[in-house]
Image (cartoon, rainbow, N blue to C red):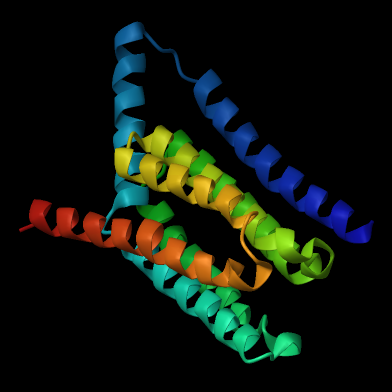
Length: 217
């Protein structure tokens, strides 16, 4: 019960404070239809630049999750069940790097859409880590399928917000893989997570990096 209240309070604080800020900005500006269209296009393009950018964070997460998941799979295959989750302790380090990276970008440019996306991913990340480290024992074979479903939803929301077909398709495929995972033997769940991370996180990140390099030649 304590952990449930903790998750609720963290999510409520982050979400409520950010939405409050967005509402203040929108209600203090007088908008004509032309200005509204211009503002919408501007914030979408800025958010797209922030979250697609050069693909660095997608590449980092694709590699990190693929390696940690594969590490768990290897440990499970060699019957090191009690320490099989140890590789995942690298994930909070990745979260810290990601927060620092986007915090620095936030200083240079931010808008309503990028703020909402940032908040959504902070909430998703917190929930995924709390589910994994605090409720993993209770969820057991349902843990990784639920994580994949949450990640897929996060990607689809982000892709729609910044109008990126690549991110939308990746999110849909991650989401589908979550449902597929329910039908696999539990020992293979981490292997699927590793494969999904390479195909739908790392590779899209590389594509974004290639496109970014072409635009900035």
